[in-house]
Amino acid sequence: MSAAAARRRGLAVILSSPSGAGKSTMARRLMAWDPTLTFSVSATTRPPRPGEVEGIHYYFRSRDEFGRLVLDGEMLEHAEVFGNHYGSPRAPVETALGEGRDVIFDIDWQGAQQIANSALRADVISIFILPPSIRELERRLRERGQDSDDVIRGRMEKSAVEISHWAEYDYVLVNDDADACEERLRTILRAERLRRVRQPWLTAHVGGLMEEFAAR
Ligand code: ADP
Ligand code: 5GP
Image 1 (cartoon, rainbow, N blue to C red):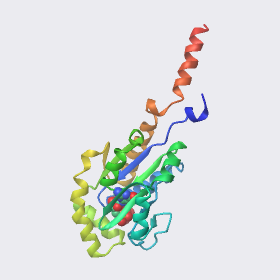
Image 2: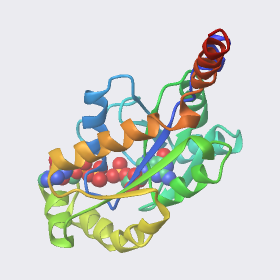
Image 3: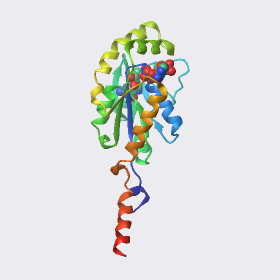
Image 4: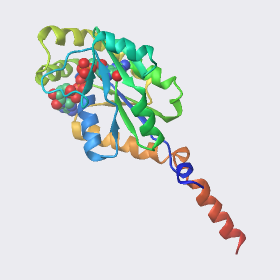
């Protein structure tokens, strides 16, 4: 069996939550735990927040540039969120998955639906992160200190819509304690990587076991 046939495809791990529930924090923690994880850097028409770096947090694009990427079929999915356009560039994701690397997406329910219905569906694990309470969600948005009062109000108003999609996800976690939430995420990844279909080398291994039986 060739090395490529023995290697599993990567997982497309989708994290969604209402803004402020902690999905970026969890994505960062997972990547520190397993540096082989690849983050899908989205393109967006939203302006950078203080400290955000082009190519690391987002690809910041004008509306025209974004529209062109969509028309050229370069987006795996895209959606309008809080009045701005966001999308996941297709090429880096397809390369990583093909090379057996797991990819983390921090995207909203619209993007999650599009990827779950795409050709990638067999590779997708979707995880929804809930806040312990709406009061705590608002506290976290304020504590993050990156958005104006108006923006925070807008994000809180959209939270109910995002949360209403919770039951469309494979896994749902409440991010109460950050360490506990991270541990649950690690458990999901460990188990998903052990699924039979994600260990293609098993076919050759079992073939070897059968040959050993026959030679006894
Ligand atoms: P999102 O990416 O979902 O918008 P962030 O990851 O930016 O949310 O988290 C929002 C704020 O909440 C950040 O300041 C982060 O440090 C904080 N935070 C994340 N998880 C927890 C947690 N379990 N307990 C307390 N604060 C948290
Ligand atoms: P923020 O502006 O706080 O970085 O992100 C706002 C929302 O847009 C979050 O819910 C985030 O998950 C979502 N988002 C970020 N990138 C993408 C993307 O590429 N596609 C989609 N559909 N949503 C995204």
